[in-house]
Length: 295
Image 1 (cartoon, rainbow, N blue to C red):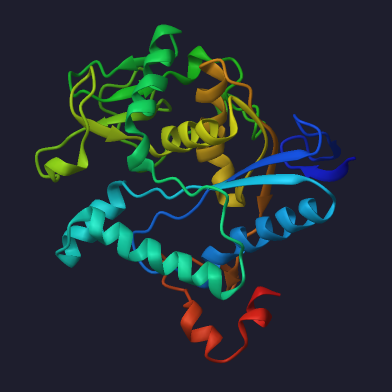
Image 2 (image 1 turned 180 degrees about the vertical axis):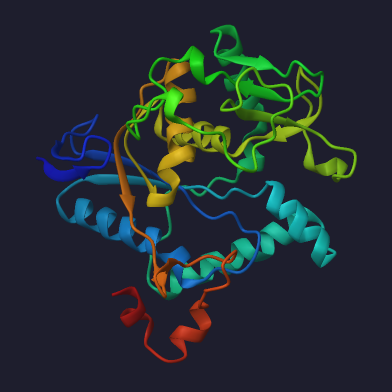
């Protein structure tokens, strides 16, 4: 029993051979519930819902994991603006995302873990990377921990780039890094942030980096090596590249197939809150049936 998938990493159509015959494990990057969802957020979940249903129809037993990134810089900033506790703000919008998915008949995931529920496992993964020489404590004494991209020869394989050709992100914090392209595994607590938004570690109190969260949750529920990792095309770099690098540097096989959906566009631009070109699920389903929006 097999199906054919387009593998974005190699840009080839490949025969899908699951790790366990008759089963398929899928991890899809879910919401960062900083604010209300728009229709662009639905595309990935609808795309992988179709894949899941197709695999089930083909005879596979499918385990689909969709995470919730319920702690990050934007959630802390938006919750402060709204005058709410960060965890209450995240949960409020998490429920809105769940309702939006249900509106277009996306099946509930097999598991929907929150990042905040896996801090201990994240610390364990960081320690594995430090022990293997792939991570280091920031040299400025800040308490941040970074992944050393030059320590892992496979960095860039997913998106077919070399480290020498990469530029650091415009919003990347350069403090304490050996290389400006190194990315944060753990972010030290800052004086202006809520005390509840940090966890104790051997390197001081802090919170996880975005990429680390997904690596931990994917392997926690699907194992050290699993079948399919999915998400929007915009996540290929740096998010998925960093996930793959840190997971494989730690000794995990991680995802065998990567699948990415394109995004929803409006006036030729990707729909995003930062550009202000968004349309809410409620506004569109007031004009068309949810099944039409899904299609």
